[in-house]
Image 1 (cartoon, rainbow, N blue to C red):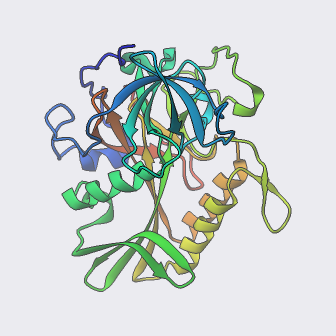
Image 2: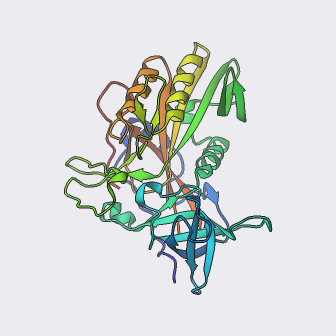
Length: 323
């Protein structure tokens, strides 16, 4: 099996809403050095998940390009219906002799009409990739247009009762940065899908430009008041960031859109309206919400493609341009 064909870099038709304009002063998408490189990856096809051998949702049966079968760690599980049987994968080799799987799924190919000129689109399959991408973007100063300059960055820092992904400081001011990986996207209004109902297909509106969506999933968790949500942990983070925000300390949600076919991010158009409401309340208390997009290539390189507009807050969604 051959890997998905590489795509030529494509740029947006215009600015990606207000936030993206600040990023346009940086290197162009076509000329920028990779933000992250995953090294040598092995092409494969997903056969089954959970594996028939190890019945865990985090283990998949895969078929390598030479036809042999293997086990692969699936850290992102279904990825909202992208990581399903027949999906094309790019795997890293597991170097530990004690590991139960020989490989780990790093990228999953998404071949849908909504991908547009980015069809097929590679999607980052591991939640850990978002933190690595954010760390690289901070190191290069790519987030300075929205976060401001900084003198120090400390990962996995504990502030009060919260452990934030990054503590960013500049003199007396502090930014508490919580990172979320976004791997799901919406669909055109007229799309007919054969996906199971548990994927809760999010439909866009005309004129349609594909949007990333967070969170997506079954509302199988509950808040203290009994309301059903997709991710109690994500809502907890929104509340904690708001509680820690002061005149000198700013809480920030940074959403990493781990796919290159989306022009904006929807938080209130997801399968969990309560999360969007909670984020809007946190924004009203002073936190900031930003998102940036990366484009993955079939050789395991990720490229920073600037900031995306979001629908966070009480105002209307800020829509981006078509890819």
